[in-house]
Image (cartoon, rainbow, N blue to C red; front, side):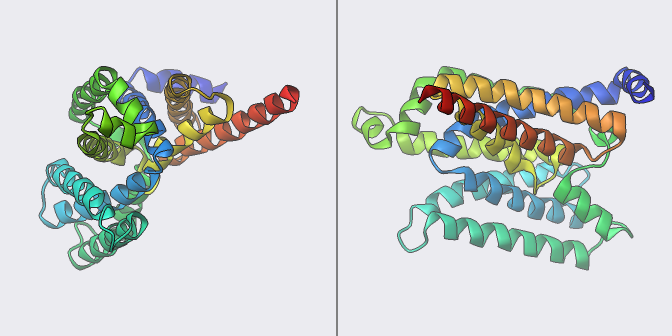
Length: 283
């Protein structure tokens, strides 16, 4: 009862509903493109770019830039382009390119934060960047409006180019044969994922971002089979887990990002069980 009363009092605060709006929009955007990334076996891109974002935060910290998004956004987007191009090089396969860029960014980022600490609490700064803020207080109204604008762009992109995304996802060669510029759409998807990752850093941290992209899609695939059904289920599930995670974090004081990911893991286990039961009855 005390935890519920605490939740009611907190939700009325402006910074809390700002954070809830940010969390819901990020969960929605990441789930829409998460299905495509998983089906195309591009899920590694999200993980690699999240590490790059950590390096970008370190650079912004060393340069004493207050709004680190001015550095992190272009660095992550450029890395998305390079990752996609490098992955097509026969000498450097996709997984090797991700390993090179992600591990390199983590190493350089930590070294910069160690050599040029922005505060006396280096461990706290690193943990916040990697695992997200312990509290929702750190998300400002500016963060909310930036997220709203960019989320609208992502959703509109998905709606207007749904058929192109569908064709590129399932049969890239056929899409090219019918005149679809598959390389351009792959590039746009990678860039948009980079934008989502930057937006999600304050909420869940660079190490946990890929969970928002992968878990809802995989959970939906346990039960549904069509692309449309999986996408709709993934979006609903991702938003629900984000809300549950944030509200649980408020009630019990747990880390926001980790709590959201745990909610996604529980949902994955539940959907896996449902899928197993359905397959058993279908025999």
